[in-house]
Every structure is written in structure tokens, then in C-alpha cells.
Length: 332
Image (cartoon, rainbow, N blue to C red):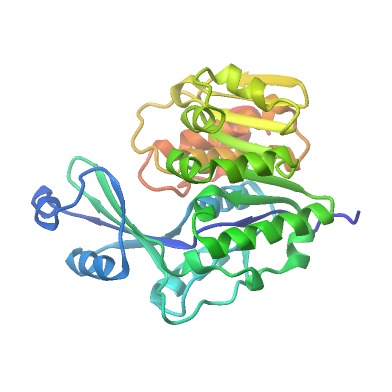
């Protein structure tokens, strides 16, 4: 097995977050689900975009957020995800590359524009999200660079993207490429609705020994295993997944790895502003510790520090020097 040239390569939705402040009346006028997240089609996305005031655009997507945190910590990263040849596609590509992340996936066909999450922010800070997956949901297996996957220490997969058929086939191929090269495969379950739709698939991946690191929150773990007790859920995966990581919100996080267990408390912060991206950035910290050979407890602590930074402000991308923050908090 050759030495990896990349720390983490990820496959995920390539989405641009479009955020704009708005009056409460606009939420009602547009018939939106206040404070919720709704999937919309291209026509609905255009109507909502046209109704927005001046907006801030920044690339997002769960796995891309995780890579952004990893890159800030000093990891060498690459992203696989599909955008279209349009303005938002250029925004996404610019943002992710400017963060030092390699991004060479060919653009998709003109028939489907770049995915976007249209976020209306009311005066009380409430975020109403409307997501159009766009080109990202049509990522074909042919767009993969098998050598780039084989050259990465860890392949990180976003559960959200398991839903559409083409990306699902692409991720199966990526898993094979990573395993053939002797690399690790990390998988985040993403959301309960994803598990409900693909539980059999996920359990098959686990039972076949194809997942090395599994990320979940308590609700996702229960949905996957059918066991409400977190510790029982973890125990049911023992011997099937080498490392299982579970986030528990204000209760912190715990993990089991090859029979060893570790638990950390949540990092104290003055005020929780927005939990969007907390799990994504927790994965950033944990994976950074993993690729640097840190202990299980240190990996969890790194994840906790990164998650605490994200929930202290709006948006799913760090607003401080993560490397300096981690050094200040834990001397890493």
C-alpha cells in the first residue's frame, strides 16, 4: 500500500447557501414553513430567489462543510461533487478552491442548474431553508477520479447524497476504489429521513465491513439500529464497524473504536446561535485527529471544539482561525 497524498477526500452535495434577511410577513406571503427545511424544485427555487432581497452567497453542503473545517485545521483535502456551468456553480468552485481544497469534478449538463439552499432569515434570527439539490443529485460514477480516491487516507461520504440513484452508484464505486487501495471509509448518516429510506442499504454496507468510521447523532443511531438507548445501539455495532462516533448535543459525544470507549463533554459557549453545521464540523475535528494519529478522546475533543465554534454564530462555515482555536483550547 502506497503512502496517501491526501488526508481526506469527500463526496457530497455541491450546494450554495443563499442567505438574505427578510420581514416575517414575507415568510407568510410566500407560504413557507417558518424555521423548517423544505426540498423545492427548480421552478420554486427561481420564485423564491426572485423574492429575496440582497443576499450573501457561500458554498455549502454537509461534506463540503466538513472539508472546509479540515482544511482550516491543516489537512490536505479534495472534494467530489457536481455543479453546473452557471453563476452559483462558479461561486461554489471559487469558495471551495480558495479554501485550499482540490475540486476537479466536471460540471454537469446545462439541463440542471447548481444546487442551492435559499435561506430567509427573520429579525429574530430564525432560518427558513428551501433546498434545491440541482446538479448535485445527478453526479455520475464516470465523474469520479479513482486514483484521487485511492491516494486519500480517508474517503468521507455524505448520507444525504445516498438518496438519488446516480450519486449512490458513484459512492459504491468510490468505496470499492478506496477499499482496493487499503484506505479507510467514513460515512455520516446525515438525517433520520435518509436512514428510513435506505436502512437496508446502510446495514448491508456495515455488515459487509465496508464502513470503517460511522458518524451519527443519537436519533440517527436509534433509527439505524432500532434501539433507543445510545449505549445499546453502540453495542449492537461492535464488531461490525471499527469506529462509531455519536454526537449528543449538549451532552457531548462518545465513540467506540476497536473495543476502546471514550466520552467528552460539550465545549462551553456563551450562547447557542445556530446549530446548522454542528455535526459537519464535529466530523472535521474528529477526522483531523484521526488522520494525525491522535487518541480517541483527543479526536472527540477536537470535534467538540470545532462544533462549538459553529453553533456560536450563523452559518455552517468557521469564522475564526480553527487551528489557533484548537491550539488555544487543547494545545493540539
